Amino acid sequence: MRSLNCGPEHDRLYPMKKFQVKTYQILSKKVEKGRRIRLAFLSDLHGASYGRGNSRLARAVERLGPDLILVGGDMMVGEPNPRLEAAEELLRALVKKRPVYYAFGNHESRLMENPKKYGKSFPAFCRRLKARGVCFLRNQKATVDVGAGVPVTLWGWDGPRRFYRKLRSVSMEDGYLERTLGRPEPKAYHILLAHNPQFAQAYFSWGADLILAGHYHGGVCRFSENRGLLAPNFRLFPPYCCGLFSQGEQRMAVSPGLGEHTVRLRVHNPRELFAIEIAHGGDA
Image (cartoon, rainbow, N blue to C red; front, side, top):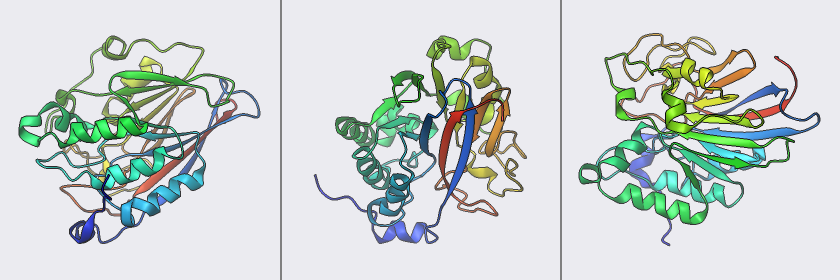
């Protein structure tokens, strides 16, 4: 296969190629004492490249030594003839080192569902990565053993377009996730990849132990760990904007993303790669 690179045009679009690693430790009674689950979580790359072939980002993920690499969607921009090279280079490098599980965001769903408008390059992108070992989760689950003394079940929710409408508030009806995904088995540790954090309460009610989301890009302007200015649907000061949230023993981590589109602006809002360690413990 030919070598992929982003080229000078992409470099001009992303002149400030910086990101930081954000580390969270989560405690769970489900994990055995002395065991750990280590995750790297990437979201909202939107075609950004950190070094040729995204080499700097790939090395940063590898240094974390994760058991699993989880991708939360919007790795490119959903537009006609999308630029897929940056995401493909990165994922090809990562899957050589660790298992990679990829749930769609609204941009992937758009590209997959309307090939007449957006072309057939994205379905081909998915086929190539699947052949190399990337596991795509579109309203599907995968159960893995990472030596934590408890099975880890990964769920990927692929939300329809109505959940991403702009200038309009929508709700998720009771029972929707159970009908769409199924019911989580209580003896496993359940991680839900759900791109849009707007429906956090539905995710918590469904029963995920850990929810991983993105989509909001940190609210463009970030005021604190959990507060940002603007959601993509133009809602001001959206709840569950960024950072770590808790409800009982459940956790939700919302990434500010590794790239952006349309509004290419960040104020006190660095791009972040999440490193998450889940260890045995109580409610802390």
